[in-house]
Length: 191
Image (cartoon, rainbow, N blue to C red; front, side, top):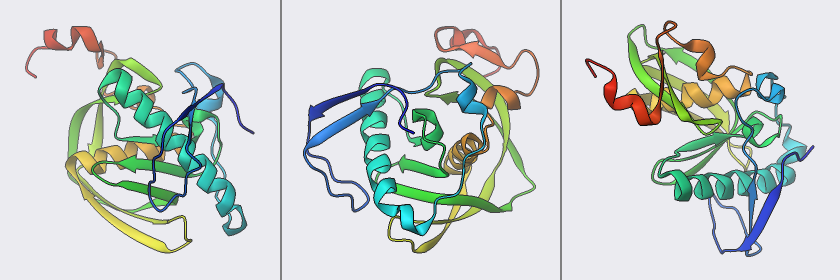
């Protein structure tokens, strides 16, 4: 099921308890318009944890490469590298793997944000997201976790979980004027 090209280079990185072999696998990030981005991902089963460790390593390596090239990137979902599994790699200070994440609580209060995405790195989309959420998931040791998130972290988790459901930020745009290229963002009034 591995899609996209992979570039390997020597780098010793350990994340979220992952053991590394010294090689870095940078996968191609699927771009807006690729039909695979609109597919719903399947749940991870406990007997797939070894494979999920490999995919988690690829997600980490790919996100770090994206950060190096674009100066941004806090999380990436498995479908973005062609893996149709309910898995998210996030690093907002420390690496976290979320398997089968489900939003279990939403605040009624909404926030508007300019959402960006590795699958369309030069485009920003104005969307509404819940200000606070709670997410249940499993980690790579199959332990259940609960994450409570507000503001930027809540927005990020909603964005990544949308990817698992085949939903992109462009599908959540507030209106037809809710799109701007990164280079033109400064022109948007009132921001």
